[in-house]
Length: 109
Image (tube, rainbow, N blue to C red; front, side, top):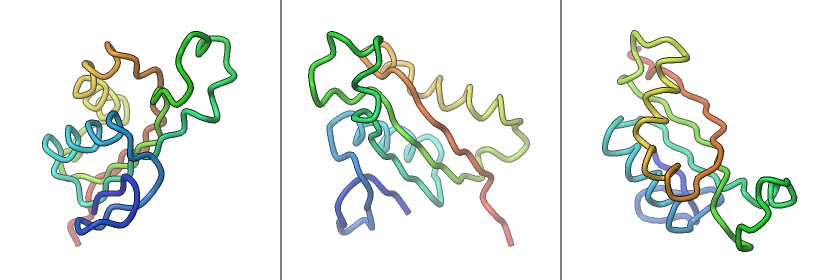
């Protein structure tokens, strides 16, 4: 299940339907085949931070991301985070500032 924004034919819900949110969701969906994917834009809560000065209003810079995937099996928490950061390196290079990651192994039961 993928959550990005609205309620579409693919079951997407949540906050953050901007272009970066959609790209993040697509990258993670393609690479991790998640059973749960929730990408939520949290940029508005961080807009007042000193590091965000100069970013236009509405910039997609901060996201909360929840992923459940069998791809994480056997990986430590740090390895999971590194994997996701590596997948999103181009987004970081073009303005993504921070991710709050919640990365779980899919339940095989």
